[in-house]
Length: 428
Image (cartoon, rainbow, N blue to C red; front, side):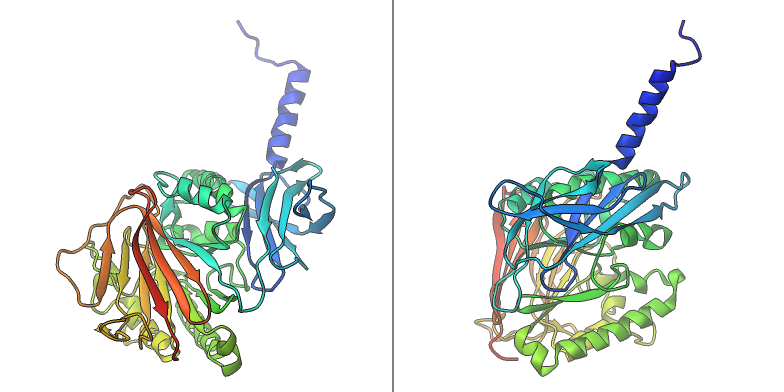
C-alpha cells in the first residue's frame, strides 16, 4: 500500500514541471494596431513572465535578430474559481510593408513555436483579401480546418471574426476560452485576427472578450476603426443596445464616436484615399431567419434604435454613405439587395450592385458552432437576394477603389463558391 508522503525529489520535480507549464506561452494571435508598419502579438501564460517577441525577416533561416518588448496584464475570470492568467501584448514597430517575418514569443522562461506573418501593405493602392465569418465555437467549428489551410497558404491578409467565440469563452471557469484560443492559433498567429463582440461574450461584462483580444483604440475592442488599403473599416458593438445593465451611457458614447468617425471618414481627403466604408458588427439590421431574433422584426433595434428612435444606426450609416455592412449572429448566409428603410435601391435592374444608392448587407454567421444552423422563414422578403443554409464563410477582396469582390464558400460542399458578386462604385 502506498504511503501518504512523496519523496522530496518527486515534489520538487512536480512543482518545477507545473511552473514550466504555467510559464509556457500559448494562445498566440496577431492583430493590427491601425498604424502603418506595426503588428501586435498577444499570448497567454498562467504565471507572470517577461513579454518578449524575437523576430527576423524572411527568407533565410530564423536569426531572431530583432527584439520587441511589451507587458503582461493579469486577467481574473469571473467564474467560481476566479482563474488567473496573464495576457501578454507586444507591438512590433517599423516593419517593412509586405515583408514576411518569422517570430516566436515568450521569454527565457519559455518560448512559443515559430510562426510567420506578412506585414500589411501601406497606402490605398493595394487590394486586401479577407476571410470573414462569425459564430464559431470550439465544438463543431466546421470551417476551421479549411481556414487553417487557406491562411497558411497566404490566401488572406486579415481575418474578421464578427462576434460569438468559443460558445462560450467564460464556460468551465474560462477553460473553454483557453481551448478556443488554442484552436484558432493556427489561423490567428499568421494573420491579423480582427474582432467585434457578440452576445455570447456577455458574461462578466464581456470580460473574456475585452481581455483576450488586442484591437486598435482604447475601448478594449468594443468599437474602433482603421484603414485597410482603399477601405475604412469600422467595428462596433451591437450588444450595447441589448445589455443596458452595463450602462446606457455606452450606447450614447458609441453613437457619438460613430458620428465623429464617419464625419472624418467622409471628409474629402480621407474618402479620396479610402472611398470604401465598411462596417462590421454582430447582430444584423435585417434577416429572414425563422427564429424571432431582433433582425427579423420590421423595427429591429439595431436599425431603428432604442425606444423613441434614439441612436438609430440605419439613418446614420445611410447619411454618411456606408457601402458594405457585415453581420453575423444568424447561423446562415444572407445577401441583401442594396436597402434602406426596407426599400430596395438597386444601381439598375441589370446591374443591381453597380453604383447602388443604399448600403449592401452581408450576414455570415455559419462558420460552425454547437447551436447548428438557423432555418429561414419560408416567405420571401423583397430586400433579400440570396439565402444559404449551410456551413461556410465569406471571402472579401477589396480589389481597388471602385471594386469589391464578395464570395461565399460552402464548407459543406468542399469549398465550393456558392455566391459570387462584385460591388462596384464609380460614382459617390
